[in-house]
Image (tube, rainbow, N blue to C red; front, side, top):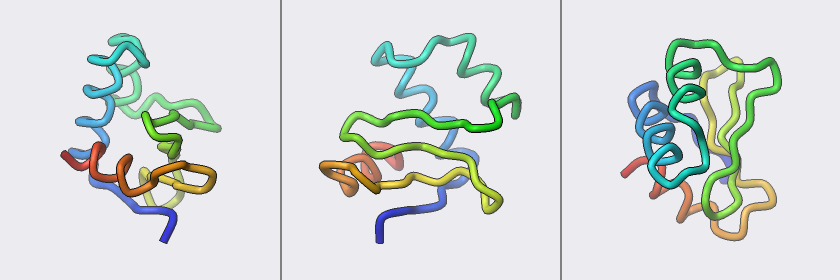
Length: 77
């Protein structure tokens, strides 16, 4: 399995992780938490997986990732 739907709480934690490591600005995180995401929303996670928005919600997509399981564990921690 190369994708995993995450909860809104996990999405918020991922944004916090990305802000703390400098990959995302606090301003962007606030906008995204409030549902103001671009049409083609996509953020790269530390091991190469992508955080995307889909009709089912926020998804961690591991296609092309060097370590999808590591990104999934990081996002859900």
